[in-house]
Length: 332
Ligand code: PBG
Image (spheres, rainbow, N blue to C red):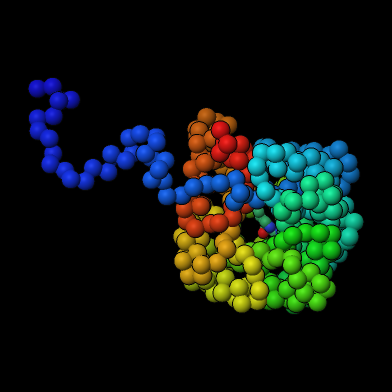
């Protein structure tokens, strides 16, 4: 008997495949619609002019001087990406990370330049000290440990200087306790009540940040970030962190990294119904890039699949180094 001619027809009422067969129907019943409007594009801004240095462990990602950051933002806007998330590489570092609140440092200068050239760009700034301290830790050290309250004072100064430069959203990524409330109060008292806070609320102590630390030159010179970043094993703690940040005034809460923590994204979204961001971090990006370079993965396909999965898990905003490429793919 010819095996392609079935001997009998199954009496099946439900055939799920009916809706999968044509692209048109598949599209109509699609549950998650990715849109470029959801993307934030991270940029690493350094001093000088005309600088565009590719990060070896992150192909396609560059350290950009302010003029180049403006050009990259213009190109991203043309691709359909609504906003950028800025990280800074200061010319000088010290013990207390004072370049983080220098009005003329790369981030503050880039905020002003981007707002001048394309004012409706959503400009978000990362607020942390690790890029600014000589020891690479996220705050002021006392006995080799990041001191919470003294660090919060520094973070507040950085956030205020970003707001003064014209940032729309400040994004504290340090994981100190109480920083969202402290930043909110100071922003309000200085007339920046319209500047929003996107808190890295559930930020895990993750190996997936490896390539970022090359890009931002922010690896700790000794030790690690275990005293303040979360244990990858915990999810109830993530819910407590998010609850506290919302209470303190966060407008958007973030889970980071994204793909290894999709369960956390979903739990946060379901528990709070709050604007939620997820960060597809450097290691997630570089893994795909490296495998694609060897021909082991189909990069355009994996890019869209991973971003769709992050949206499906409940993220409203997706921070991704693929923002431009994915926005272009969505147009075509
Ligand atoms: C801290 C910060 C980090 C990232 C974003 N903000 C690094 C860290 O905590 O060590 C990581 C982002 C990425 O890996 O892409 N300023």
